[in-house]
Length: 283
Image 1 (spheres, rainbow, N blue to C red):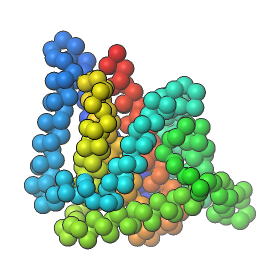
Image 2 (image 1 turned 30 degrees about the vertical axis):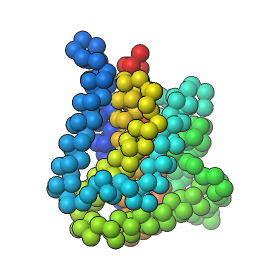
Image 3 (image 1 turned 60 degrees about the vertical axis):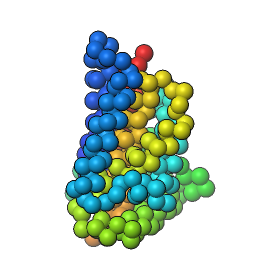
């Protein structure tokens, strides 16, 4: 399965607003102010949400208040609140580490396409090792930790967050069931549109929560943070859809989930790096 490619594509599409905002912010130094940019971004996104509601028949605003979506939004906000720490040189997301994650992600995708499940998991162990050097990045394993795992008894065992990955897949299944129960038309949508709907609902929930938390934040940073929230919603929605697909995949579930998490990790890395660029434009 080429879930990694799909994951990154979803996240980069969702994250376009971040880079768009960067360019917009640059032009704004001559033409307008940050408050105007914030208002423009919000109006553009509201228009997009209304068009998505019209085309799918799903009330995104109502969906954003469902238990599963609210839980994901809170998880995303926790990661976003760690973003400033993620951008520090020590224990943070550096350009070098992002490049390592991207290279490993591409290698994982290639191994998956070749049907080499053992190589997928070996590369994913290296991917996780890099993630563990970045404070608070993608994994919130708590009591799960790492487990010793051997796909092939004749080869060296690996250290992987197996229990965490399994728990997240169970959560993804519960979320998809909730989505399908509350929205009968949801299962009839293509995977890409399902991801779009879920991402929109997550982002609406995130933006609603941010409104109450960011009253004193400067307009420029508020706009950057809003774009970051939209991008992170795309990352998480892509992961949930990918994990759901793994449960029904003919491929081995473990390697499939590894591919999904690798794609998610790279996507979050790009989204966070885009947020850093946007903040730099704020001065």
